[in-house]
Image (tube, rainbow, N blue to C red; front, side, top):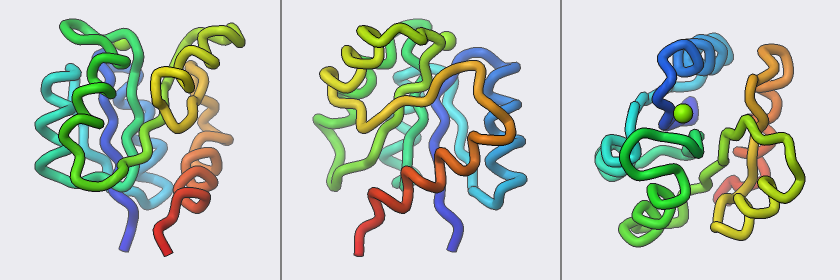
Length: 125
Ligand SMILES: [Mg+2]
């Protein structure tokens, strides 16, 4: 069974790229364009992994994560997808409770491997 990945991202170009790359790699992709939508989608589809843009209209990625964590029935790994390459921003994402991060723009070649590596490290055995 292929892993189901929820992508929460407001930029339609970015979400298309992420979706295409992940679907090509064999993942099932669920999309949400706002944090509020993402929280509902997570409850509905029980994703194996969430990729979260930090800058979203309405509630931002960090607040979305906080609300997801408050409602989740089991720990869902959540990666911050961030355009910030600054070390302090990455540290802030980890401190906010993200399980890791991926830098934007994503590398089409490296991205499926990054996601797969992360899923394997977090696999429930
Ligand atoms: Mg954004």
